[in-house]
Image 1 (cartoon, rainbow, N blue to C red):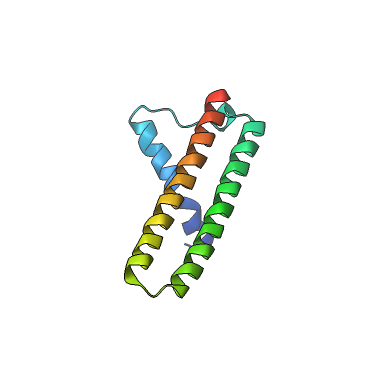
Image 2 (cartoon, rainbow, N blue to C red):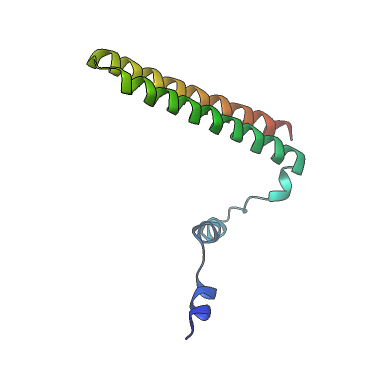
Length: 102
């Protein structure tokens, strides 16, 4: 059996998950259910959230590098985690609203 024959029979994790859903009688998700325009807006929301998270992480690492007091470092870490959660939740809320409006 050549390498091509072996990889042709392999399935991705996504394909396997879809097969398991189908075996349980659950219909696979439909890409056509979300219009292309909405998918573009969702992608933009996610890109913006990723950019905000990257900026937050850079600033966080910079502040940690300058802080020597353990308590202040701990406060900074808590702030970073809160802000990260807030940005992620805001992005998911926007995506949910876009999908609901589709």
